[in-house]
Amino acid sequence: EAQVTQNPRYLITVTGKKLTVTCSQNMNHEYMSWYRQDPGLGLRQIYYSMNVEVTDKGDVPEGYKVSRKEKRNFPLILESPSPNQTSLYFCASSPSRGNYGYTFGSGTRLTVV
Amino acid sequence: KNQVEQSPQSLIILEGKNCTLQCNYTVSPFSNLRWYKQDTGRGPVSLTIMTFSENTKSNGRYTATLDADTKQSSLHITASQLSDSASYICVVSVGFQKLVFGTGTRLLVSP
Image (cartoon, rainbow over all chains, first blue to last red; front, side, top):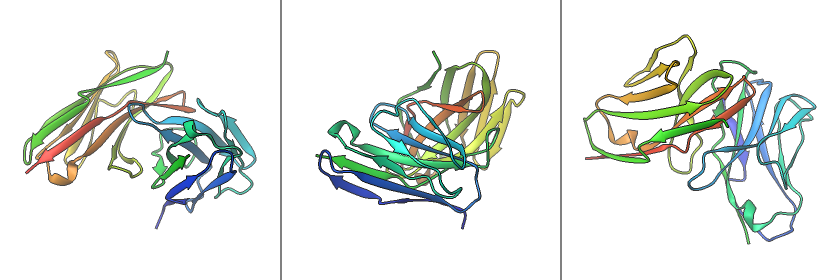
């Protein structure tokens, strides 16, 4: 089944403790992206990647890192999480730029206390 | 500033009724407009995608329209079902590199 898999689904952590949210797609898509969704706000892009070893900042990159060493994986790294990073996170992929639909993962609900 | 505004914020309709959701955008350069359905706590699922030259596109009981002159789009749901209860998000692509998301319309279909 074609899908984007995120792990974990739920995570509670403490301020300052480094964490990684994994994202993997099995569709050989070139384009991958991370978003966060907060109440009353639309999804906001954190980082995106056009292809392996090519990443760029989105609208809200502060406090996050990403890497794209393999085509299928695009992990999101929070080096020192803070409470304002409590949010619902989504990974998405697309064949490439252009008029293609995006496939979203099921989401990771992160709480930083 | 690139913006996507949706209305209404929330809507309650009876099962079997039709409804129309609205999306207005100010985005440049415009590449395409997408409608997504998002169940609570789940990832958005694509319903339709329309380019500048397309006026309408259907996906089952969902029909999206696009007026590129007025920069408006609508999503019409026919014969609503309980499973249509979800948030519907309008998304506009800016130059194929960036997506601008609306805040969504929360639809509740009541039996």
